[in-house]
Image (cartoon, rainbow, N blue to C red; front, side):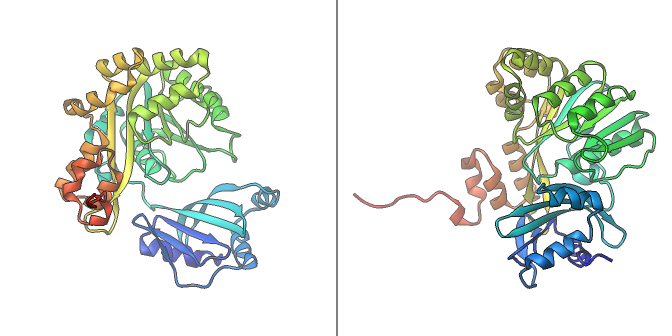
Length: 364
């Protein structure tokens, strides 16, 4: 058994989301959003390299020795599945391991609003799940793919970097492909997927104009596309897609979004009220005719007002969702305050006065 498994098992038993191992530091785990030190000595360069090499295959060793970072999945029957990022830093190597849940969660398990499932009844268009790194986008997408797999008779092709949750085909055929293992990049995977009779294509990240253009083509030609971006709101997501395109294609991108975007789910992970976990809080935009009109009219900045009043269509701003979660005692009000955009309306719930803006009471 690889010796690194002892740290992975400890992290999983503690309920952490990530395990950090780095030269010159003791092991750290991210527990409910905060880094916690494990009682252990600082890793030397030789010790940590020896631990990591035990879980690399020959090709990965060659890539890493050539000076490249590595992103891959590590799966062991003793400790489960992890997403791994291996890198070099000033003092030596470091590795971050993301804990993958043993079971693919259901949409209901994640307490996601019903509108998320309603998106999956469409047969064409693009659905975007966005958020900063580590906000649970992959978990939400895995639950969405699982719902499709159980409820629709589709050919589902996923393009991931790396593969985290492994889906077994049920009502649907699920084909999972990994960047760096089965294909060079997402754009290549999309070109190939379009020749493989897909109904649904999951793109792990819309990271460049070529990938975005290919995803647009897929959605325009009768496929349901699910994708992610590292944006923190619906408006920023739309702006990012349009801004990513060359000048001569920006209008075309806006037209595409107005016609083929189904919705945007932007999420954050907020500490629960009991402090024993985190839950996803979502901003949701549904592409209604009013939203499409604003996109096509280049008035994206006006969309938040539509979200705020669009509860009947399943829409909500992040601040609205945070306030509801506070009032339902589902999240820690202090953590919600930190994540809020308009912090004034959250100040009355804050229990830690150090978080609040300090008032200068000096008398002139």
